Amino acid sequence: MKECDVCGTPNLKANNYCTHCGNRIAMDNICPFCGELNSDDSSYCSNCNKQIRPVSIDSFEKLFTDYNKLLLAKAEISDEDYSKLLSNIFRKLKFSKIVGHTLKEKILSIAGVFAECRPKARGEELGFEFGHVLYYDDRLDDSVQIATIIHELTHFLLFDIIESLLCDVFQVKQSSTLEGFVWYCLSNDLALMNEYCAHTVEGRFIPHGYQRYASFESLLEETTFDDEKIGVLMVLGNTFAGEIIGQLEDYIDHDLREAIKLQYKKDLKNPDYNSIGYESMDSVKTDVKNQIIFNYLFDSFDEASDVNNRENLEFLKEGIKNRV
Image 1 (cartoon, rainbow, N blue to C red):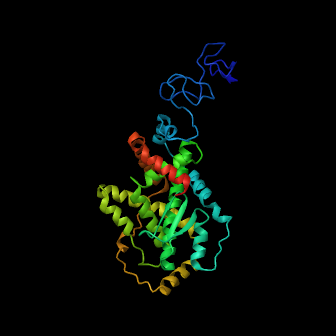
Image 2 (cartoon, rainbow, N blue to C red):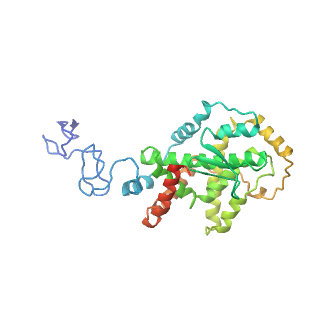
Image 3 (cartoon, helix red, strand yellow):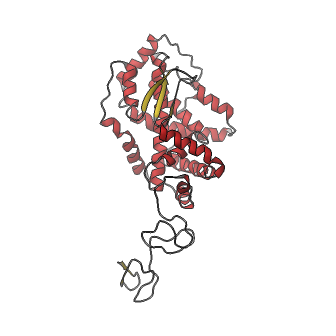
C-alpha cells in the first residue's frame, strides 16, 4: 500500500492516483526519459520501452542502454564506499596463505590469489594478462620474472577496480559482457593510465633504477593525445598505483622486498636509470580521481556503444569467457 502525500489515504501500489482525493501519487519508478509512471516492479517503461531499472548485463544490448548511460553520467562514489570496494577486492589476501620455497614462488602465490598464473615460453612479451590469466615468460631470470608478475598483477587489479566501480554504478553483478567493456576501456582511451600504473607498482617492489617503462614509451609513441591529456592519465595511473601499493605492501613486505634486491644482484642485473624520469609523486585525492575516471568511462561508453565496435567487444568478451 502507498499513502497519498496529500490526504494520507492508503492506496494500492498499482494506483497512480489517490482513490479519495484524486491526487497523483508520487512513485519511485518514474521513467527518466518520458516521465511515464510505471509499476514498482517494472524494469522497462510501459510507454517508451526504455530501461528504467538495473537489469542483469548479459549482452552488449543490455549494457549500452540510455538508462546505463544516464547512470554513468551521474556516477559518483563516496570515499567510504570506495574504501569498502578496495577492501572487498583485496580481502582475499587476508584469508590466503602465502607459500613457496623460492622468492618467485612466493610472488606467484600472492598473484595466484587473484588470477591464474601460467608460464609461457614463446613470444617477445615478458608477460601479459587477459581473461583472468596472468602469463609470464619463465625463460627469463627470476628477477625479471618477479617484476613481470607484479606488473601483470597490477593490470588485473586495476581491471578489477574499474569493473567493481561499474558494478556499483549499474547496480549489477560481474559478467563477461561488462568485463569485455572494461578491457576495451583499458586498452584504448585508458591504456596509458593502465600501463603507467603497472610500471609504477612494479617499481615500488624492485630495486631503484631497474624500472623500465618500455611498454609505456611504446604507447606514448603511438598516441594522438596532447601533453595535457597524457599528464592527466599519468596522474590517474599514479593515484591508482598508490592505492594498489598500499594494499600489496602488507604482503610483499620489507623482507620480501629485500629478498628481491638480493635476487637482482644474484642475477647480475645492473641498473641503468634510463627511465627514472618517468617516476612521479603527482597524484590527486580519491574523490577527484574517481570523478575523472567516471568521465573517461562515460566517453568510452559512448564510443564503445557504436555498432562498428561490436565485433571487437565480442572478441574481448569471448576471450575472457574462454580464458585465452
